[in-house]
Image 1 (tube, helix red, strand yellow):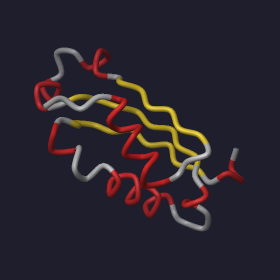
Image 2 (cartoon, helix red, strand yellow):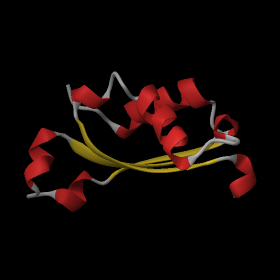
Image 3 (tube, rainbow, N blue to C red):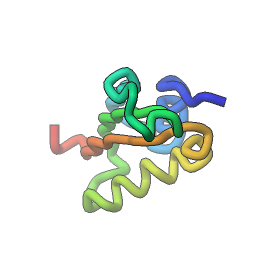
Length: 88
């Protein structure tokens, strides 16, 4: 099964109830890269109150936890920009 940006968006919406969410499929930028055979490359920009008071590492852990079932299905790389609403 191939993971899509829509799959990632649905998982993040369910777990983080974001105020803002953008998911991009950057796989075309990595064509020919050895890791591209292992899965797709995505970027995520998410703004959620769930991130209030959390460190960058803790925010990334929440994102990875929300995607834990999708990662083995074909996410090779994930660029994360996770902010709380006060950081806009």
